Length: 416
Image (cartoon, rainbow, N blue to C red; front, side, top):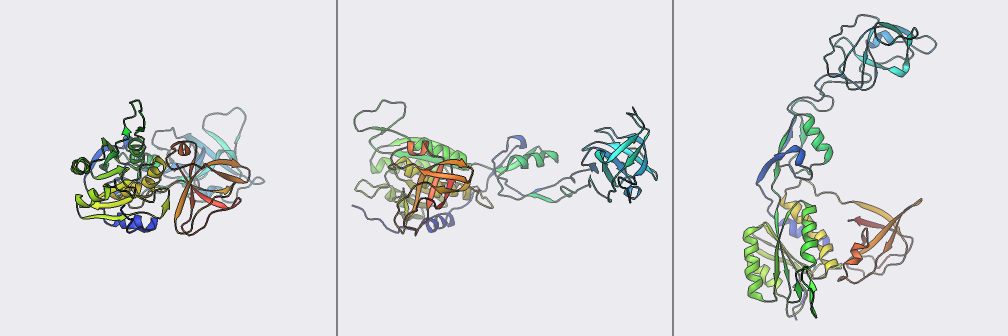
């Protein structure tokens, strides 16, 4: 039986893997409207200021601020409203001393105005008057610039908007389109080849015979690759044959930027994954074994800058370890300036959870929102039971050197 070698703490394993990965350099141009979740390839600069004109932040009256100084409910300022600035039109009204113009939220204000008085702080003098000209009372003074967005206040001309290596969010798309940037250069999604191994593994569309199981890991891993920003290439099932696995792995590495193999990483006489990874390129296997549960026998390696991960065959172990190692590897290939943040919540544990000091445990958990905050209930089950994850909202983390957790303790839960 092969022995574990170079078993690492999870943070050390991840850092070692990422250090040897060569980020991709090729990019593509896509429509900004379709770029959600993509990673910027270059720094984006503002081609114009935003706003491009002075805008009102509320419905009210554009004024010269000095005309309102000292105004109060007991001693209002009186102003003549000489006109209205229509939305989507230039403000061609010139205000003299003691004059105002009706403006609307987002509308342009006259060049001779420097503030806007909220309509609720005014009152029209005279009954039944709708359209200017008319006179108003102003019950509160405004300062210069109050309730006005200045030119370039949001984004200045040629200001850096987004760095390279940034995951585009909905608000980023809005900001780009507000500046007329309808196309953007993004990184090509890393191609991640996925191989399932095992004589007992069959395609999900087949009926199982004695001792056979349907391939789960290819499809859960493919979903995780897509969620991480990669492009999965599911390449089928390889039998437990060294030459067959060797041929499939070399072919996959020629087509892809990263390779993930599930099963074959257990410490047994049938373990061939580490041997194949060692043959794919330098530096080869970086570690065989991570101090976690589930997924201790995970293999991590790099072949000529391309990450290669050997996942355990058990579906829970495979998903946990891809999240720990595969997801960061995809992000490194994309050249992310910062790894994408995971959704994390802190919750009160509802029952005791055992663990062994010296390893980092991840336990599926259901979350319930209460008046006091979230409660986390462990979903116990062996690592080959996929429905422990189906029935969970996230993974509860038991730190590396903690011998279990007690009911009532606060626990970190990584959301799916």
